[in-house]
Image (cartoon, rainbow, N blue to C red; front, top):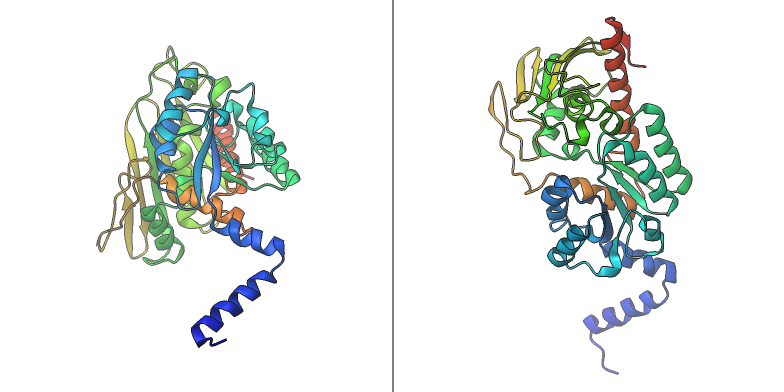
Length: 362
């Protein structure tokens, strides 16, 4: 046989491939495969953000849905080409365990259902993403982390801003002390939410109003810039319209103290708009405004404006990071333990409002 060098290399490579163990071949195939995502709950966030974002992801794709509304199921089937066999209701949710196309279950339900469905998803042997706030309490959040660990599945909280370019730069500027030590941070998020029919205004379903919904981003921004957890908090709660905001605070202001000596001031509200984060350091400053919304951030420093190309949806990088964490068996940046950190701060803020004293975060 007359075989040139290029053909010999091809034959040698083919022979080598035939000697690979089946498990190795399967692993190689899995690395190139997109992981299937099932969205649980087809409300505004899934409709306007997650569904469209999954059309741009590199390592995962939308393959199934769970909804209690037949008309929504029909719309999503047509829009995203989802077969009827991959459309579930809350009564058939546990049947997801038998669907090999589903690798990840993304929980996008009211807060009081996060723990239940995260634990059920873990018991089904599926990896889990859960929207923020991760749980109604630290204890509940810990049960979710424990359930995922016991089932041997990975768990991510839907912290889209952990992957957003402007936020990543703010984190770098703070942690690397580009402008020296950060001494003071002002970080706030609020908007008008005066719909008494919304589950977010129901304490039993939402867990605590604006603080757990929007304030979480503001406190997260500060601790991520500093790279440390606060040790103590003080806080104040206000209710100008108690007939609308029943059992929850309409607006909350709070202050946090950090081990480095830095302090942060925060506000959140369901009755007015605010969206910014400002960090003052020894030799300069940097800010994001807007900072926390899902439409996009903008920023500048004492040296001038920040410029970054941003993806069409912030959740693209978030979900791809989780898919890669599963494929490569590594930790995800927004792991369940990150959700627990914010829940500890939230509980300390509520304690401080009630006591009127400085409270330890723990």
